[in-house]
Length: 118
Image (cartoon, rainbow, N blue to C red):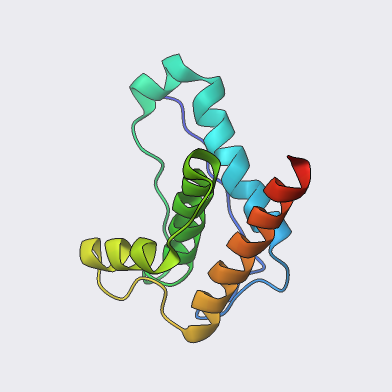
């Protein structure tokens, strides 16, 4: 089994990164690695995301990943629906208002990059 561990060390618990672009790039790179290595994906299983409690930073990463996929495929986004779906699966995902605002800001910036490139 092949696996890789990626660690973000500049993201304190119950807070947000100072800038959104590195996290957007990380999410895109994780997805790109899955697409570029389809045979490996059959053996490697899902992407596992975790933080200390498994709901704050983890929720932000997953919400951002789901939002980027939705923007790429549907060219629209429903952030509230993404959050509700996450919280249905695991209560408390995205712990703070700041984290919610961070996800919103990151997805807004990603949407702007899509608009400017088309």
